[in-house]
Length: 285
Ligand code: KIV
Figure 1: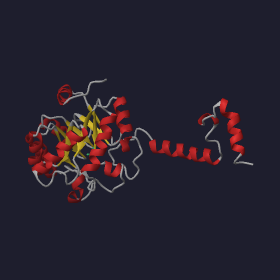
Figure 2: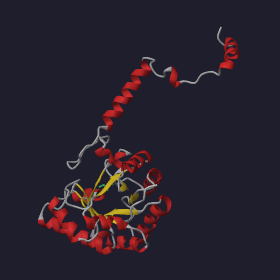
Figure 3: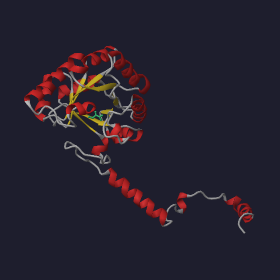
Figure 4: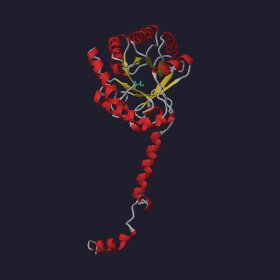
């Protein structure tokens, strides 16, 4: 068994300038393969709404859906630090609601931490969850759950005023008790500044390389999420192409009776062959 990294390891990595690697996974196979590849952290992101369920955004995702996927990922990657993503509506109503849903991620799905979106406006929720002894990761910049309020899936912090708002949000998240920060879709200069402004590890998506680590959506980097590809994605594989070609070959083999071949079938026991042939004659003249 490998050793699962802890929050102290991530602080040490920030101190030493060693990058933290993070990927999303929503199911057992991708979790298991990510663990085998040596990833530091997995996020069971609410992006599962788009990547797994085909919704236009993350808003419809429910707590029960998240818990089911978190459990599968936990089973696939027992040696990886796994983070559950709190879906829209699961922490917005009250501090009590935020705590009881965060507890579900830990108790029912064995998550090591939870992530939630927002800065100053969710500070009391972060404090309440942290006070319950649960590790919280903040998420600022582009926050997809509030994309309608932000005017769409738009990069943030591109003006001095908007950049200052992202900085203030990050400071609020750290003060409230979050132990790591995810910053999404902001200019690299802002992300680099954030890395030095807050003490907690700052990970990014679409925020440049000058931060403590990166997260990417598995369907994007593996090339099987086809609905859209953000500018910040690098494709490391064409899994969609591999799958389509494999299924095409299977269709062709079946249509031409090339599959199944003898090695894919079960034989009748040799000592039963005569009895079997006699029995068949009753049915086939
Ligand atoms: O849900 C998700 O996958 C995210 C990404 C921005 C990493 O939060």
